[in-house]
Length: 383
Image (cartoon, rainbow, N blue to C red; front, side, top):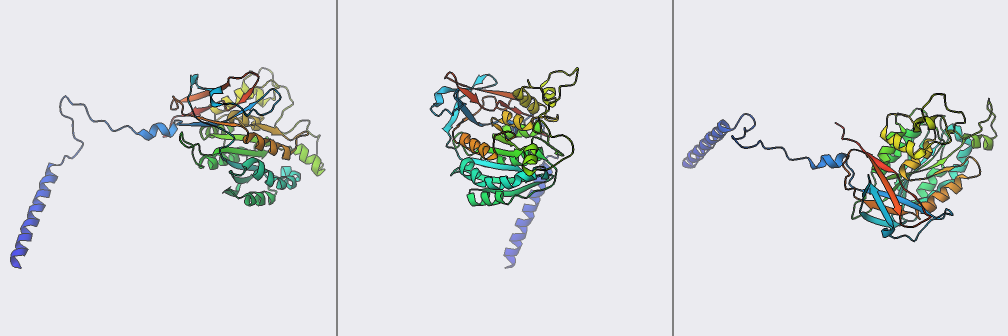
């Protein structure tokens, strides 16, 4: 027993001595390269490119004939897509079949209180015509605050019950902040890949064309929506229509145009830039140019017609309810378009190039009207 203990002690002493020798030989700093040999570089971070680059563009493309009817008989070979002038290879092509993830964003402010009872009856339209049998939906209400009333669900009953219980809130209207929340929610849905298309991401906004108190700018919303492959559809609610329906009397004359549409001429000496044209309500304003400008200048303000700009910038559509168009008809038309449009995906050859990428979609048939989002903006990664 004593012999074994002594042998163990000798082994322990030897190990400790070896460890000390190794510690004495270890360098105190980085190993200097030998003369004539280059210093070893750290391996490149493969995630850096994906952090701000675009690996896949997934977008809906709406094609109509001269009479405005949807065109359903096109093949993938009929489409040609360029990204910054470079023709792209189409990786995925489908007609109305890819499932939809939709965030229904509804203004609940006291400004449209007389319209709330009608909005409560629209739940079944969202589930049957917009979501469809394979879709999922979420409901967000907003005024001074943004309330996630129903998270994503495939349950039609849950969506319809949530919409039927909408409550009138305050007079505030944080439209852009609410849109930013909707885009963020959709960004978490299954991301499409070349092998698997995932879900079409749709933000359906039902609101006045007015923002009050948002920290987010519209350009920020559009830039994120484009990168997340979110298409924005908007239904313009009118306080004038609400006023007529509710038979309310207010001080001052009734407006002669819906909220967000200016009837005043532009100030003298102003340059005809997209932002000025929109801010002054110029009839010849180029909404496409303004949408691109907003994405490129995300800190600047888009003062007028934000609902239309949002749809043009993401390939969606705007529906006004000021005149004869009803809210129900607008929702029905949006649903019909969603399930009759083409979904096209491509992996851009220069998706990591910084700056604005212009997308053009052409069809090899005459007399057709093609609508898709105009592009996306790649910004450098944040530090």
